[in-house]
Length: 539
Ligand SMILES: Cc1cc2nc3c(=O)[nH]c(=O)nc-3n(C[C@H](O)[C@H](O)[C@H](O)COP(=O)(O)OP(=O)(O)OC[C@H]3O[C@@H](n4cnc5c(N)ncnc54)[C@H](O)[C@@H]3O)c2cc1C
Image 1 (cartoon, rainbow, N blue to C red):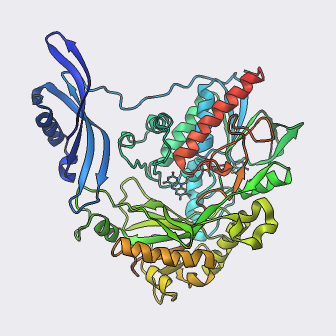
Image 2: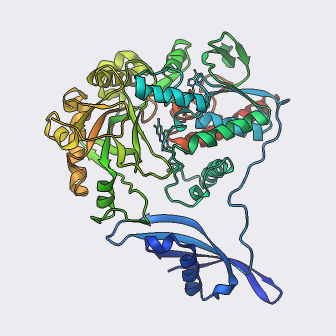
Image 3: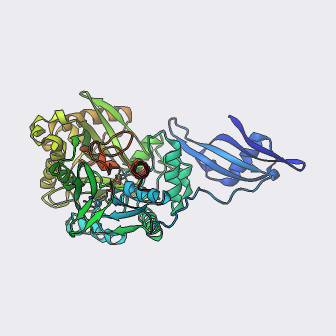
């Protein structure tokens, strides 16, 4: 046990101080504040009566051994009150008279870009092709019920972007702790649980995200920014190597520098950029299937206990990376206690992804298992130049759509059957609302992908006994892991490599992956835009 003295102030005849210590407790003890306080007292030798409060400031589950522990960093407030504020709030001034900048897309990147512009005194004019998050819910419900995908309002498009009905995991590999903390604190400011500030793998949940996103947008509007829903950017206005604004599908022209945060599913935007001669390049991504196990089974495997997770542990997570025939095959966007959702954004596509509610209480745990693919892996697509992997993605999603019977029903196969190359005679129950149909996925997935998946599943089965099982269902296809195109930008100025006044941003630009990373990229793009305005004496 390591003890760290954090800070101490001598007041009158006693020490007022905060002290941080690390504790390793069983899951039950870790869930009880009184127990934590008692252990804190005995570990530090401080009298219980002098400890005003204890607060957990870091928490992670260590499930590597048979005995599961929860690692905590606990801050004790000794003879001093516990601060009321649990997060750091950002102030947003009124910018209605400020310089106007355009933000295209209101996903995490666009949302955080707009808020950061406001902090910097710039007035964001946001255009978003989809609907506000409340109306959008009706359209996502229609995908499952009527198998109709509105190309402007679905799981990818609309207020909050792909982040709105996402799982809301906020884990990122970014080492820029300050920037990550700012994003997490902003989520707390608009209603997220402050647990996200302490958990090693923070998670909001799809039931909470829409409300938080809506409150963030209301802040943009309250500060004088504009948000135009159901407004699609159709063209960039380019003059003498500079982007001067955009044209919308309504025929309107909006002038100003542009933060382009349209996400990786806006294929029409990539086509528009190519048509307009804007420099882009093909980029590798990963494709595969979504694997759905009974949550109890994953709990038993990960917690080494036939009884499952018990009362005090969350639904178990897993993470795999294996090498198969020279390529990485890895788990992607794992959703413990979650559901598989139809994430197509247009006609003739079946695309699956995963999400979970804050309680992570469903009967299933799912994850994408995907194979890295590079442009050179599919020479038959070379003719499509920068859009080669985008075309590959489209064809793959169409194959899934055909295999599912030309609806949103997903083609599916039991895991062990897939490895053995056998179509499943029956399928287990699935959380995927539009339904599943048995399909020989090993036959129609590109051999480059299916061979590696088969090998990877065998390896995963060896590493985690019970993982490779016919109780698990594979659903096709998981194809939207990252952008198939990069909109090339200058590393320093964050502007497009050739066009001034254009700031390609977020996952669609090919420089971010996931909610927090896209949000941080949005903030950085806003900072870069502000610098651009200052350099050009516009601010
Ligand atoms: C079901 C699901 C679950 C996910 N779970 C997680 C998770 O748990 N954790 C995580 O980190 N990530 C998760 N992701 C991924 C995450 O949502 C994305 O990484 C993130 O949303 C990318 O942010 P973005 O702002 O760059 O792009 P997007 O979120 O894709 O937003 C782009 C926005 O631009 C709009 N747009 C597109 N074209 C135009 C146009 N021409 N004119 C105007 N507007 C336009 C779109 O409507 C959209 O709102 C999940 C995604 C899905 C679909």
